[in-house]
Image 1: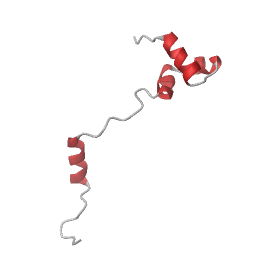
Image 2: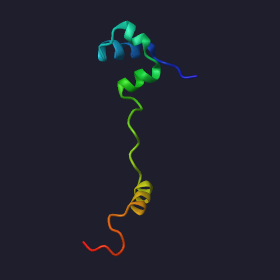
Image 3: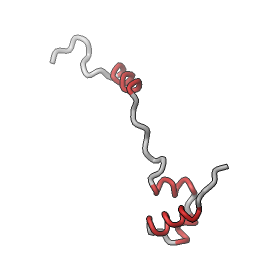
Image 4: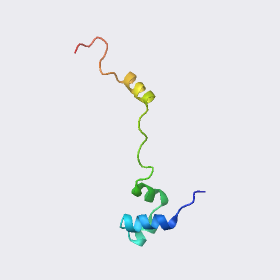
Length: 66
């Protein structure tokens, strides 16, 4: 079970985001986390995934002249 630091979350929501108490309490923890910017960013692409994409979608097709 995940534990939450409610006083810190309330400060971030009410003071930081300017939410009214009813708006704060209507949010799910996941929604609040998203609004605060936590865990919302995708991980950067690694070299292995880049190589996969380069192989799947080459800039030049064999035989092309540029």
